[in-house]
Length: 323
Image (cartoon, one colour):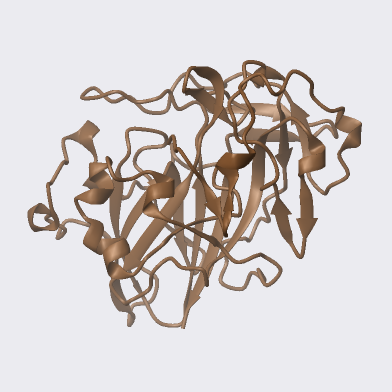
């Protein structure tokens, strides 16, 4: 998704942006001193396209692999279960012709209920993700987004669970240029996209600053001096988010995803809190998949969340314990 201005805290990143030719030079990979594995340049796609939309335009959603300088292989844009996991029920999805104008036109009785606890409460969730999500409850996969990239859609999920329970979500900002964290936009072949995730649940749970959000893939990066790590946070807010005509030389940072990151018992105490973003920053005012059901998102008290950089951080893991 494209955006005009991005606020992180009180900082207006737009004032830090440089022109499209600002990245004529890139720093040397040996200058990076952080904890991530580093790759440079694009990766070859392993798939042609995961998703076709006969009734509208959709960006090509491909998957590839890139090898970092330490010899590790990484799936791009991130490891995912799109082709094998159950898809979430469509709240709004123009490619399947599900385009209700309001909640009054939504028939949700057909939403499958995933049982975690037989004696638990049935919970309904409303989800909008830019671009893709995978939802786990107490470590069990409930559903994945039905659209990996675009057009923008929204989903309904149902599960039966007893409190307390743990919500874990993988969110991916899909990329057109695999391994480079960018897409064709604003007249630039290599323009960073942005993410965003918002959800509310019928038991009163909403996305908020109390959720945890950790970054596992950041790109495009051209200057390692803009990066830092502090108190578990992998920070890139000082890096430019402007498009580049030389984006094929961009670096990417990769962190290994813990095998049990979605488990109820996983210790995420070292993860930073999620950063909040406004609807204007995420740019949903022209997205029917969100605006037609706003009362179930911001109207229910939910906020858009992501890591500290909604533009450059392309794979983020979220966790929250409902008490």
